[in-house]
Length: 254
Ligand code: PGA
Image (tube, rainbow, N blue to C red; front, side, top):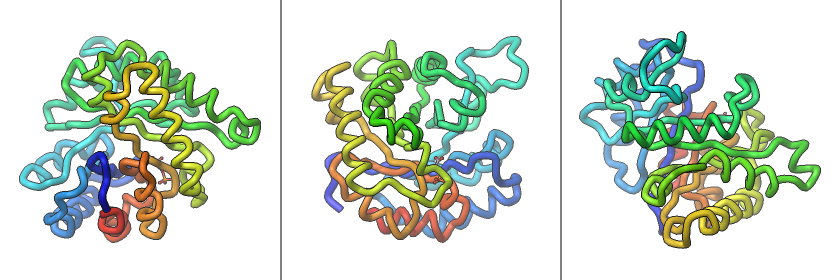
């Protein structure tokens, strides 16, 4: 597939996989995906598996991501993980502001912006998630919601930092439901977000920034979604837990 920006496909394992299971999965991916050059491939295991998975992917094309991090850098923050701790395991990416964190743990876009700035300060590439609920979409508020989330979650970034930030458009109604956005819906939302980045930064930054689609991505719909001009990759939940499915999503996207 001829894309303007290099595709980036990340597996968000969420709260799944013991260390042994994580190693089993990642070893399978390493073998199967060894020859893939066209896509940046990222796996995001739970914190507890980062150490072992880090060693396992060391000599491969797979890159490591975390699923969250603190906005603070070390200190009295019980239960939190600092960017500096992730760096110990050669983590390169970090998912921030996933809708599960926004909805279940009440993370605001302002907090997501603090985390995004902290990630850049530690030279981690943030994958910042945004997306509307079904209720918001049906009320015709998709653009308003995306506008506010993008604007506030990326607040305070410099232009080079913005270019090095990945945005994941994940409509909440498509996450874990088996009901993916249509290609038209995805392209519309992605184009809207890119246009907004052009307004907030400039056209060059907007042209460089990569926007992933997330929400029920599977081998059967990956190619169609990825063929959209403003869709630059995928953030995959459920289907990334199975080596066959995740590999097929990547291979079908090339
Ligand atoms: P899903 O999750 O692929 O299981 O829908 C996507 C995500 O939450 O990132």
